[in-house]
Each structure stands twice: as C-alpha cells, then as structure tokens.
Image (cartoon, rainbow, N blue to C red; front, side, top):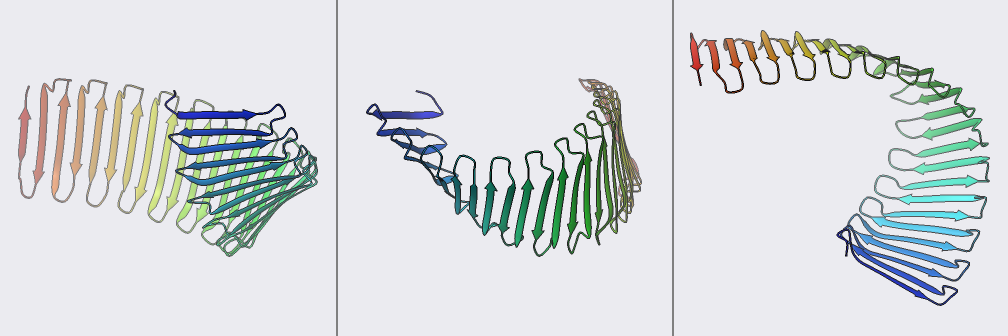
Length: 350
C-alpha cells in the first residue's frame, strides 16, 4: 500500500474488454473511476472527484475520435467542455464557463492548422479571437475586443520567428508592439505607447543575454532601464526615474555577487545604496538619506560578523551606532544620542 494511493482496484472482464473499470482512491483524489467498453473504444468515461475538482468527466467515442468530450466541474471552473472530432482534427472546440470566463471556445481545423480560432467571452474580454495558418505559422493573428482592449493583433512569420509583432490598441494602451527575430533572439523589442506609459522598449540579444534593456517612459516613471549582460550576470543595471523615485540603480556583477549596488533617490529616500561583495558578505553597506533618517549605514564583514556597524541620524535620534564584533560578542556597543537622551552608552562585554 502506498501513501499517495490508498486504494487501487482494477476490474477487467472479457477478452474484447466489454467492461474495464478502475477505482482509485487517494489523498488528493477522493475517487477516480475509468470505464472502457469494446475494442474500438465506443465509450470511455472518467470520473474524478477530488478536493479541487468536484467532478471531472471524459467521454471518448470511436477509433477516429468522432467525439471527445471533457466535463470539468470545480470551484474555479463551473463547467469545462472539450469536443474533438476526427483524426485530422477537423473541428476542435473548447467551452469554458466559470466565474471569470463566461465562455471560452477554441476551433482547430485540419492537420496543418489552416485555421485556428479562439473565441473568448468574459467579463473583462468581450471577444478574443486567434487565427493560425499553415504548419510553419506564416501568419498568426490575434484579435481581442473588450472594454480595456479595443484591439490586439499578433503577426508571426516563419518557423524560426524571423518577425514576431504584436499590436495592441486600447484605452490604456495606444500601441503595443513586439518584434522577435531569429531562434536565438538576436533582437527582441517591445514598444508600448499609452496614456500612462509613453514608451516601453525591451531589447534582448543572444541566448546568453549579452544585452537586455528596458525603457519605460510615463507620468510616474520618467525612465526605467535594465541592462543584463552574460549568463553569470557580469552587469545588471536598473535606472528608474519618476516623481517618487528620482533615481533607482542596481548593479550586479558575477554569480557570487562580488558587487551589488542600489541607488535610490526620492522624496522620502534621498539616497539608498547597498554594496554586497562575495558569498560570505565581506562587505555590506547601506546608505539611507531621508527626511526622518538623515543617514543610515550598515557595514557587515565576514561570516562571523567581525564588524557590524549601524549609523542612524534623524530628528529624534541624532546618532545611533551599533558595533558588534566576533561570534561570542566580545564587544557590543550602542550609542544613542537624542533629545530625550543627551548621551546613552551601552557597553556589553562577554
């Protein structure tokens, strides 16, 4: 007896499999039942009852799959139905009815996928349509019509994706374009133009990500840039300019994080800087400058914390300093200077 499968029962009757029944009872699947009848599979029925799937039913009829139906009833999916007809998939239809998706329909026709169409009707997506033509996907087009997305069009050309383009036109996204070229992604570019995003651009080059750049221009984000170079992340840089974040910069170098730096400039944080070097954290420094914290500095060195220092300067705490040395805390010192405490010294030696 196995922990995952508390009970497995198989009943097989007759040479031509007039009746084949399997009962599976386990922790995650309260009841799993399979009925198979006849050599040519005139009827296959599967019942699955579990915690997340109240009812799961599959009907398969005939060798060439004239009719294939799946019913799924669960908490998040009130009804899920799949119809498959014929060997070459002349018609493939999926109906999904749930709380967030009122209707989801997929049509697939022919072996080479001369036409692939998806209709989606839901609260947020009034209509979602996909057209796919030919084996090598000479043309792949997606039309989406909804309240927030007036039109989404996707054009894909060739097997190696010489050109992959997405146009999105809606109330919040005036234009959204994606270009993908070649198998190894020599160039990957995304343009987003909208009211809140003036320009959004992504460049990806080579398999090992020699250069990855993101530009975001909007009302709240004046400039957002990301540079990623090489597999081991020799350089990772993020520039963010906005109303609340004047400048946000991240530098990451090497797998073992020889140098990790963050610059943050904003209204509440004038400067925020983090330096991390080496796996064992030989040096870790944080600078914070803001209205309530004039200066906040943390220095951590070595695994056994040979030196741990915190500087805090603010309105209520003129100076707050903590020194910690060695594993057994040979010296622990706290300096607090504030309006309430002119000078507060705590020296603890163990």
